Image 1: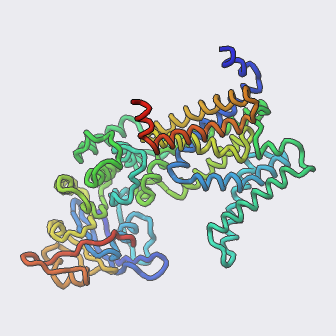
Image 2 (image 1 turned 135 degrees about the vertical axis):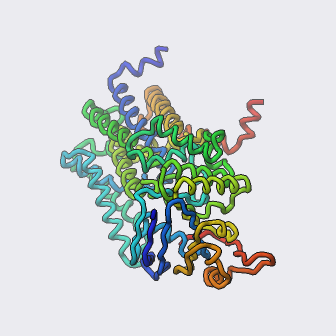
Image 3 (image 1 turned 60 degrees about the vertical axis):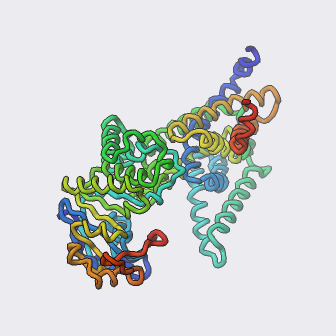
Length: 245
Length: 276
């Protein structure tokens, strides 16, 4: 077991924003984390990353966790190349005061190659497309070489080519034994994951998608944001803003 | 050729140039982070707020760095306490504390009973820099550069995305504190030569100029250093031949270079017209 969470609750000093969370991530498992904006997806990630102390409950995680944030959170005017960003992943492997050497550069270039961006390694990060930037951030997490990756809506605002490439890459990473926790709004995509965790300020359900993503669970998870579509069980209205809970 | 070399035949000009190289290189490299972290105004407030600490250290015969550290801690405590007063917001508290402390420092430095030379902390005395000042500035400048080299990766990652930096192993709060401590140390490096008021030009001018022209952090640092050195030389020549205050001439040329390039960028059609 790579991650194990028991009866977790969290708050930002005020009311409880997430409670009753109990789940685990096995080796090579892809877990979709579903929920509305403000439902607790980012809060859960912050607790797992050690940035927010849980109110109660406990969790176990590997010492190194890779995190792929939404690209909108990074500064696009910042003077760094795609390679510079990938090299930031070495901070968790190489002592912070040591300069990067050939080995780290090789690791960063290999990670960029894996996300199909070798040719753009020297391009300004802020000038890449949304999908390419997301792939650079995945490359940065690969350089961290963490056994578990947390991905915050990695497919939001991403072009089709990048989305296909990312999806294949994530499947490969799972096949290598890495556990993946993916926050997503895409129900169709969530159905292809191994298990799904539904959150709406508390845990609504956790289990294989075919058993878990029932209409009742989705309604409880998304409340008013859910609509019925002909030919499909349900779809989630696109979010109007990003989660900042 | 003689006109170019003549100023450097005087030891006071050589010492002034060396002092400017120390503050210029530290200011250029550190200034890149100040600009990228959008801390220019904070750096200026810090320079003003620690001024009484510098004056107190000079009066007591203590190292200036100690005075700067005491000044920063005193200012932080004063801001924290003032913020607690009812009806006073954070920005008002900062403004009140910074101006009060700066006024207090000026009062201490310019009182007739104060020993002579303390006004140098305010306006600098580039041409009066002694060998002892140079040794102290040089040692502190070397320490600052070593710290900046060591902190490069955490600074880069934190500035890029503060939110995800902890997941990479960087600690934004410690990075911020280290950066502010370095700003205080750099002010001490430059205060003898340029003074508490003009040292900000060395900290921000070259980096802001480089930010206009290049788009990689190491190149930005290199170009800022070149700008700092060129402005140091230009300012000293100007001071020598036009008989104007050396610190002001250096600071003025730094700001002048920035303004010319910033205006040129604002009106690219003028540049293309002049090329045609």
